[in-house]
Figure 1: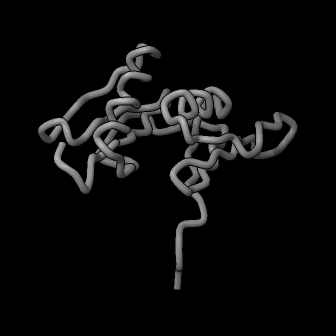
Figure 2 (figure 1 turned 30 degrees about the horizontal axis):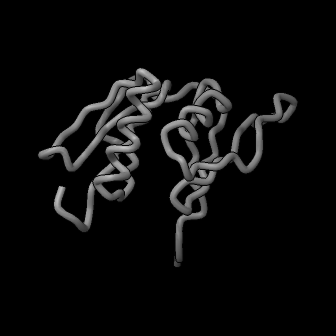
Length: 120
C-alpha cells in the first residue's frame, strides 16, 4: 500500500519557465534538476512543500477546471505569496473569507494556498 506521495507530474509548455514562476512565488521551492532538451522527456524537477514536482514538456490542460493542488499555509505565508504575485503581476483570487488564495500557472494548472490551523 502507498506510504506517501513520490512526486506529482505536471505537463507544461516550458518547464524552466514554470519552475521559475514557482520559485518566484514560493521562497522554499528549489530546482533539483534542470531541463535537458536532448532528453526524450525534457523535464525540470522541483521540490516544494516536501513534494517533488516533475514539470514535463508537453501540452498542459486546455482549460482550467476544478482540479487543483492545495498547500496548507499560515496567513502570513499566504500574504507573503500574494505580495510576490503582485510584484510578478500574476493574477490571483481570494476566496472563503480570504482563507484561500487561488492562482494558475501558464498552462492552466491551479494552485491553492489555504490558511489552516489559525484564524484567517
